[in-house]
Amino acid sequence: MTQTGWNFDNSYARLPNKLFSTIDLSPVQSPELVILNESLAKSLGLDPEVLQSEEGVSVFAGNNTPEGSQPIAQAYAGHQFGHFTMLGDGRAMLVGEQITPDGERFDIQLKGSGRTPYSRGGDGRAALGPMLREHIISEAMHALGIPTTRSLAVVTTGEPVIRETELPGAILTRVAASHLRVGTFEFIANWGTEEELRALADYAIERHYSEIKKDENRYLSLLQEVIKRQASLVAKWQQIGFIHGVMNTDNVTISGETIDYGPCAFMDTYDPETVFSSIDVRGRYMYANQPPITAWNLARFAETLIPLIHDNQEKAIELAENEISRFGDLYRDFWLSGMRAKLGIFNEEPEDETLIGDLHKLMKEHEADFTNTFRAFTFDKLEDANLFKAEEFTQWHKRWQDRLGKQQESKEESQQLMQDNNPAVIPRNHRVEEALEAAVERGDYSEMEKLLDVLSNPYAHTPDQEEYCTLPPDSDRPYVTYCGT
Image (cartoon, rainbow, N blue to C red):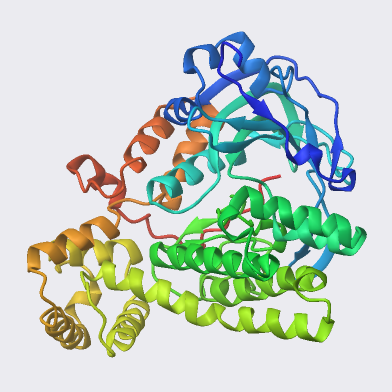
């Protein structure tokens, strides 16, 4: 172990060579550390002070690698907006797998670190704005209790990247339980052998689901576990109004973490047809479509496992289809459980789904803010919004109060449950844009640091969070996000 605390293993590099390419470093001119996630660093067993030194920054910039590192770019494929294509780490480098003092294993990946064999004509670099955006959103998601990759650091490179205009370059250090994707399995199923597919599946089981490795049909069990994780994950997205924006199969992790914060955003006004991404012109990945698209993506995963699930292809397909068909009920159970908590409901009653569905209809009709509506319920402050003045809402509110009367828990216990499940703050899009503009245009990181501090404890409901609960100013133009290239 180095003075910094790096303690690398490279288990992925021991998989079949087809799954990755060993790469050379692409040093940058004058790297400068602009963000270090000190609490994450400590949890990984790293020394934040050393990470801020020239030695630490050189690692984050991809200029040097620590002892034990074996830099690789991972190969994968993916269905992008429904169309299958060969992909891979075109601007990312897996430095290695950090083994923490607790024995946990995390990928350390540099994003924006230069060209790889999978760059497909790209420069392999990233701009500062999108890397800061990923840092903000991924850390907010972590604080909200949603499984996610995380950001350890962002460095500027001292070199411009050319997109529509010239932008400052940057590299983000991403931490993940792994970077295994549905697209990784699609790649090896299409261009590898059954032996290589089995090696990858066994690796995924050992790394993420070791409890199933002795199951009678561990590959069917793997499918079941990934379906369960993804159903839980997307239910959590829906419960906070998060819209991923680019749910291609290469952005679906086997671990069940949220990955790739390109054109993602959070809803203000509740509308199930909300789309933010500039490239999602047909609304494939709109808020309402996230659960069914997840099922579609998982079906693509199931297809890759067919040769492993059963020797008889027809039987394998039948078994896989049975598991995929369970996604809807799994998702519904996770979603209902989360929505009950947001309304202070502890037990289950048959009318719950209708009660929740009727609320969402009213929220859409009266253009209610998603986060602030549930925040108002939490503290029983139903004053300002148009929703609360509507006669239909008064009727719904009585039904809700009657429903709360069907449980043993007290009003105070219900309020605490709501407080624990309804954030005061989310990364409001206008606040994120203000922080990014200050950092990128003026080199002022103070707004971003304050935003990160407020977002770090979203369920605190403290006075200093009040100003971050306000809605964006009215605009004639809808908010649009772009893929972070």
